Length: 368
Ligand SMILES: Nc1ncnc2c1ncn2[C@@H]1O[C@H](COP(=O)(O)OP(=O)(O)OP(=O)(O)O)[C@@H](O)[C@H]1O
Ligand SMILES: [Mg+2]
Image (tube, rainbow, N blue to C red; front, top):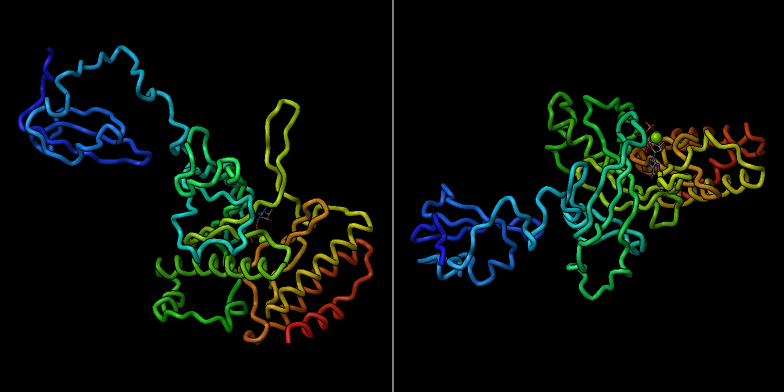
């Protein structure tokens, strides 16, 4: 009966459980210098960890024939092949559960939102670099072979969403972004923590820059949440994590003749030439969205055909970090009037007879 050659006495088992239940185990007489490493599953440790044992026999190790490295292991994954259930390059674990509940999107949660712990976020590429933030396309999907939902064991696999596309809008710190939105927007907004206030004033400090980027992200998430809950046509805000806002991807997935799938973001309003009927419908949808915001006491603040997506027949308003509080901000009327004029100009140029001043008056009446 072959003995475990280097098995020292007394042997100590150390287990460092990693993600996915895999653990490194080694026998050693010195905790700092493991004598031998063996890859085993967590189930192999049941009853042993973290027990110190006197002899390898107690672990049944005396029967183990040392593995011939030239032969494949049949009971273990091939280490040369990436494990699809673990994050690979360009991937991370879904951040859904790692943020506080309040940092997730409003109820009722749309059924397409993937909430499973086993889901991976995969970077699919950059959608657009903006002035203050960059928009990335992210797939959140449960990989095949991930097993049943541990977080929702009574949920049948096919009931839970297993894949969705998201936009990650990541705000840059001030030194990289060109924060053109100044006090005109932040006027009337309270910054509760005076430490933050001081930090924002001291824009040279790295802390100050980070706080500002986080606050813009917060402002966008909160505005999206309120607007979505009130029924405005905006992307569903999935969650916020520091300077990253994750939201519904407005677009489609298209498959070409070679079977390759590609995500195509909805074009901005500037790029479309809608029919007369659709133009009118877009106007109705837009003014409805502006009315919802007005009733919340808000103006978008940077509304233009560049911040409106035309998703087929559906119109979606985006880019809301600078929303202006109509009651608290002394410049709010100017901001609202500018929004009304900018969007009206585009519709007028396309042949629709609309009146920006009438729209402005109507929105103000709804706000107060
Ligand atoms: N939810 C979304 N779905 C699809 N595309 C999106 C979404 N959000 C943003 N985009 C794309 O990313 C671009 C930039 O987004 P957004 O306007 O929110 O950021 P920004 O930093 O203000 O950019 P800009 O400075 O160009 O206005 C949009 O014009 C649009 O093309
Ligand atoms: Mg924009």
